[in-house]
Image (cartoon, rainbow, N blue to C red):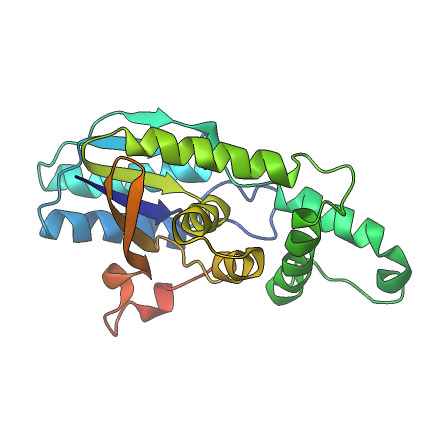
Amino acid sequence: MAEVIVVRHGQAAFATDDYDRLTEVGWEQSRLLGEHFASAEQHFDAVFTGTMRRHRETLAGIRDALAQADIATPNAVELTGLNEYDFHSLVDAYIALNGDVYERVKLDLSDSRMFYRILRLALMAWSRDELINVAEPWQEFEERVRSTLAALSAVKGRVLVVTSGGPISALLREVLKLDVETMVNTNLQAKNTGVTRYFTRGMNFSLNMFNAVPHLESSGLRHLITYT
């Protein structure tokens, strides 16, 4: 039996010219998660990340805290299947598809609430193959997530996975046989450095915990619970 611990990246730099990097809050979240793992004396037998900067930086924060406790972590294996979908292209494609509506509305996509409201609609349209000129078709996204699930199923021991909200919710969809709308709703509530845990024998994954932030739940740290 293996234990697979899946972590969403720390807070990224939403509404800046480079989303794919951690904010100072994101770095702090990552270090605190590493300290939480260290306090539980958790050793990892394998580590996987996507190829995105925010994945690598989140792992670096976790790894630094573990190193302070003299807990070594294996070198990470990068899997493109753990990369986030291109949400900017999806939102752009959805707005283009519905231009007659949005041309009458002042859109401020730097407003996270407005952005995620439109992203939810875009994800549903993407799943129905209604969007054109997107970076990745929905079917390809689902297939790479399934391939990633198969890769993780072959690993023994305790496995750390650092990825993004999209793949996390898509993995959950595969394991729990969720409908797309439930998957999308789950995706949009993913916390930064939220922890999801599975126990698995081969391809038989059993969900044990979802989107937990025990490292941020004390009264002095709850301001660090974020979603971007």
